[in-house]
Image (tube, rainbow, N blue to C red):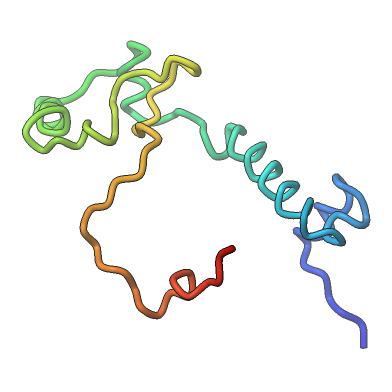
Length: 119
């Protein structure tokens, strides 16, 4: 019986070699590196929102949008985690402070993560 290979696996093999999945120690690192490279592309991070246009000076916010931004950066405290200032490294607004914040959502007891045997 011939095992069908998903197209994404063929892509990994073409770029990273035929044995890319043969060693689990390096396979996860290779997959993570591939995802990181993809996330750098304009397909994922095109920075083409209206907010990006406002920051570049090619658009303006409506009065309603300005009130929303004031709420975002003020009373709603959204900007405490989703910063609306430019990232020093990229110069782009990423809307993240790169931290983890527990919002009080309870654990899902069906999630197998909580029963992993971590060494």
